[in-house]
Amino acid sequence: MKDPHLTELTAGCIAAVLPAAGSGQRFGSDRNKLFAMLSGKPIWFHAASRLAARPEVGRIVMAISEQDEVDFRGPFAELVNELRIELVRGGDQRSDSVRAGLDAVADDKSIEFIAIHDAARPLVRDADLAAVFAKAAETGAAILAAPITATLKRVLNDGNASLTVDRSELYSALTPQVFRVDVLRRAYDRHRGRPATDDAQLVERIGHPVALVHGSADNIKITHPEDLRIAEAILAR
Ligand code: CTP
Ligand code: MG
Image 1 (cartoon, protein in one colour):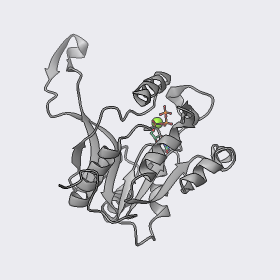
Image 2 (cartoon, helix red, strand yellow):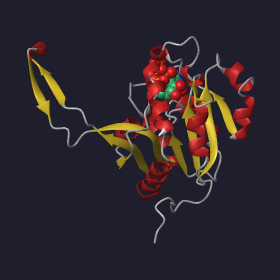
Image 3 (cartoon, protein in one colour):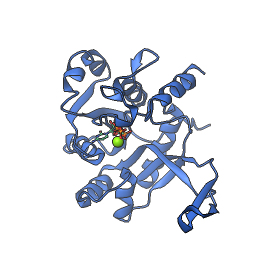
Image 4 (tube, helix red, strand yellow):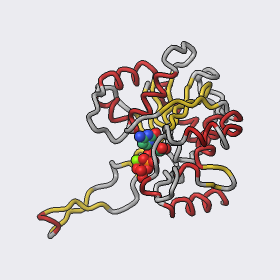
């Protein structure tokens, strides 16, 4: 029987790009939220180690801010080296940080796919990684996404009326978002700073379909302080 945890991809053909150059405004701590500890390790380390555990991932590039460089090259250097993470300088927008990661692997012929994964998502499951990698290998562009469970309302008449939206076709986008190198390169070459909420949107704009792969809703992004408590509970399970 086919092992669902194995993909058809060659070992090492994926570069994982982890944008980590934000500042965590909404988290409200005095340093980058990614340094917050989750079960004894910083958030970014969890995210990177889940990708590092996949045989398809040959390189891990993490985009960091100028401000955080002293931490990543100082107290965290050992953890960075443990996972063989390559550090690059991120930018003002998340897409600038992703682009920096993309540029770092541009000349590497062994890299066929890029998996962009928020350093703020420490809980992505191995089976979901395998599934989204396999779909990207098949289609050139695939992202993890979770079905919306909330009941959704569309505001009408300045909030004095509303309509229920059919949620059966709606998913929330997660990461990793995985693309064939040439597809993502084209999308970023065309990107001129027009706001985009994720990398998949840039790929949609060049007319390349992006497949959705059903991922676990546990793959939360740590945004607010309470998300850390939720992540602790999920990890402890
Ligand atoms: N990120 C990045 N470069 C930026 C902005 C964000 O690499 N210029 C990264 C963050 O470090 C995070 C991921 O993109 O790993 C998702 O962004 P988000 O959750 O919004 O993190 P922050 O931007 O740090 O948080 P906030 O928006 O609350 O300030
Ligand atoms: Mg942000």
